[in-house]
Length: 475
Image 1 (cartoon, rainbow, N blue to C red):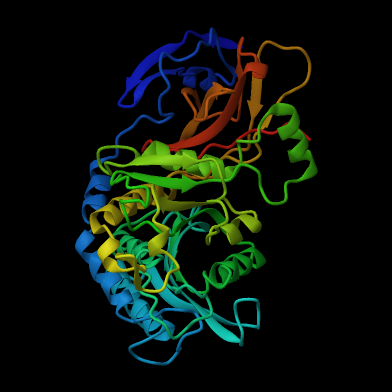
Image 2: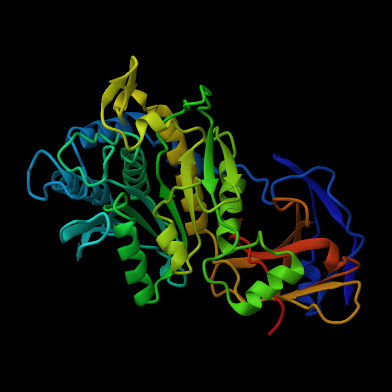
C-alpha cells in the first residue's frame, strides 16, 4: 500500500484539498490518503469555471427569442388540454402544431443529429379529463456522438398546456405566460442553441401536454421510456421560471430554485436499511443531480445562484419530474425563487384594482434567459461527462481506521480516472475532492467512515466530471 501526503489547491469557489494518487494506481496498489483534515472553507467539489465553448453557447441564448415564443403561445388564447385540437388559431392543437414546426426549425442546422416527433396517445376519462382526449408531446432528440454514451439520455421539459381558475374550463382565456410558456420557451431556445453542437450523450428537449390534468404527457413519456428500458440518467422540468418578482414583494432576478427529493418513491428494503443506519437520507441520485447543477451553474457565465431545495416539490403542488421519479429516474424541478399565485391558474380579471391572470406583462424575459443558461450548462456538462459510476460499495465490516470504496469501471474511451468526494455528515454539499486515478478501489487511510459521507465520480480527459455515485454496503 502506497501513502502520499496531502496536497492543497485553490479554486475559484474556495479552498479545496486534493490528493493525487495516480502513481499508486500505475503500480497496481490500492491508493490511500493520510492525515485527512477538514477543508479551510466549504467549496465546490469541482471549482472550475466553464470553458470558452460553453460560454459561447450560453451567450447565444436570447431573451428576445424567448419573448417571441411566449407571446406566440399566449396568442392562442387558451392552451387548455381539453381545448380544440384542430382550430388553426386557438387552443392546444394550434400551439402543438406551431411548436412542432419551431422545433423542426431548431433541428435543421444539426445535420440530422436532432430529430423531432409528436408522441401522442388518447387519455381515457379521468378526474380532470371528462371525455377521451388526445395528449401530444413535442419531442426533439439530439443524439449523442460517443458510441459508449449515446444511449445515456438527459431530458429537459416544459409543459405547453395552460389553465384558468377551473382546470376543465377550456373556453375561457388561459394565457399561461409564466405557467408554463416560460418553461417551454426556455426549452425551445436551448434546443435551438444546442442543436449546432455535439455531445457525448443524448439530450431530449420536450414540450409536454396534460400537465394541469395530472402530469399526463410526462407520465406517458416516462412510462414508455421505462418499458423500453431507456437509460435516462437525469431529467429537468422547467415550470414557472418566468418572473423575478414574487407576491411577497421580493425581486430576485439572479436566483432560481431547483427541487430535488431525498427519498425515492419505492426504495428497496436494503436501501432503506442503509439510510436508517448510515444517515444517508440526503444521498439519492436526484439529490446528487441537484448538487451537480449547483456546482456547474453558479458562475459568471450564468450570473445565477442556484438554491437547492431539499424537497420533491412545493407544498400542495407537483410537476412533470414526478412521473420520472416514479419510474426510478433521477429528476428535479426548476422554479423561480419567489412565486406570485395571482398569476398562476387564475382567470384574467381585476380584483380591488389588482390585475390577476397569467399575463406576459408579469414575465421577465431576461430572467428566463438566465434560467435557460443554468439548464444549458448543466445539460452540456452532463452530456459531455462520463456516466455516473455504477456498483459503488463501501466496506463497512470490522473495526478499521481506513475507509475502503470500490466501484465498477466506466466504459468511455476518453475516461481519465475517478475522484472521491467527501463531506461531514452535517454538510449539505460536497466540500472536498480526492483524486485517485484510473482505479476501481481506494482505501482512505485514517479517515473514519463513521464521521463523513463519501461519493465517487468519473472524470474524462477533458476534465468533465460525472455526477456523484453514493456507495452502498456490499450485498
